Image (cartoon, rainbow, N blue to C red):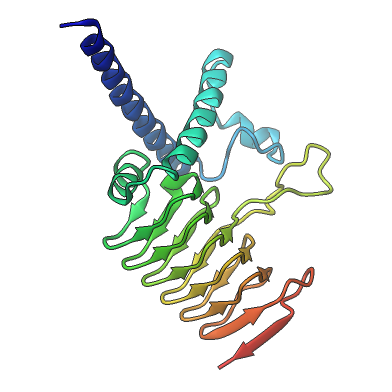
Length: 229
């Protein structure tokens, strides 16, 4: 075996071991979510009693987990730029444990956070450069259409918090079957988009949208217009 083959073999082993480590990390996060709920070490709003019931890892282990968390985020960004739809979907399903039904189309350039807390129904199409935030849970129904550059956020900061923490301002987002989330629209936490609803291009959704409604606009704190058919 020459030096080139040895180097290739080492790279293959590193690649496989890294995927095993990523799969194990995602499995651990799912286990933590089931056992501790939303009790996370980076949320300062919990009481001393809450924290006392959670066993933090040792400092060195905590640092390693923090570094690996950043590595996973970097890998997800790179994954979104790999020009192979089947490969991207396979990795998201089997390594990052994202719940993707069959016939889901996920175009490139995406940014995904906490994929193990995201569920996507059958026949849904996610356009180029979309951002899917699964930190507090994201459920997307069947045959949903995301246009280019739609952003879904389940976490945000509290401007009154000295540490810029979330203070429970984040929350899950649910997109109903056959909804259309148009280009450059933004959906904020704690909202539900009803079945068959349409969110117009550039809209900022701050309230839940009824089924079969058409919403648009970006006035702060409001939906500028709501048309219900």
